[in-house]
Length: 412
Image 1 (cartoon, rainbow, N blue to C red):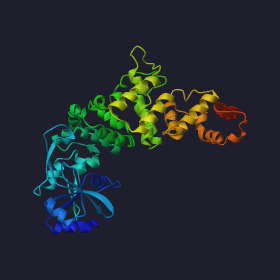
Image 2: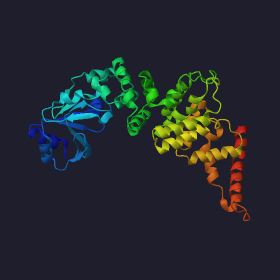
Image 3: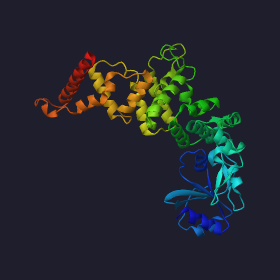
């Protein structure tokens, strides 16, 4: 069905159609709009179902329908009001009768940049909360005190600040702070969803910095909050404490790869520094081992995506030794492990480069070395070797390759 046909059917039955949310925001900001979400006013659900029998109903608390419009699957909802009566995002009673206006619906939304509607077909902007002003001035502000009724909106505001390079105003930061208690009980999948989208931003550190400003970092990501104040040797880390260093490495990694698992691994690479006792500071001996313990506890508290976890585990374990390996056998083992890890050798190298400001030669030429490893002809293995001996022979061939490579590298 075309959008024109959809709108005409609604209008012919005295209903109103609006596009709302992110699509409208992106259009105003001159970004490429993504999925369209529609809101219908002045129409009952019964009449809508009669007009569009093909619409698929989803959602339990309130009706949302999926329909194919202009060859894209779109969400269609009815204008609604919400009243908070319980905990978290499920603690709402919802009213969605045909008497509600688009302004009623926009009032319940989180921030003003998301509380703009485009009326169809005339394409009139409905902007009762000055969202257009906020978009043009790159500000995130709560629509009303309803903002804090869904605690994950605090994470969403911080995430959108990272995505769009916006600032969050002080009153909204205060409302974010009021979300702390309920955030403790939010489902982990909602937290992970916001973290994933924040890590995908051009400057992910903004997300964590705003959570810290709103005193929410300890509540949401205590593993990262523990890095604050953990001093480091200034000669190696002029950027500041372990938190500042982590934010610096995260953003540097984000400039080089869009892979979310790699960005998470960069975020997690120094988690162990949060456990360093004060008496040891500014040094962090053994933080690669304690970092694995922190990651394991994080994964028990909120189940992390498997690829994130495996990637971060590898980086935590290997990031300290990667820059200092000299023995060909150890180098061969690390290269093969990095290649097999879900993170991959390219992303591993990006993080090591960010952390050390350079790469060891074997990582610079990792693809060439691995190619030579894979070209080793197993048929040349002595016929009398068995079992483990074959593996030892293969390992020695790799060592020989690295010896030759390192000699040639040092000569140049």
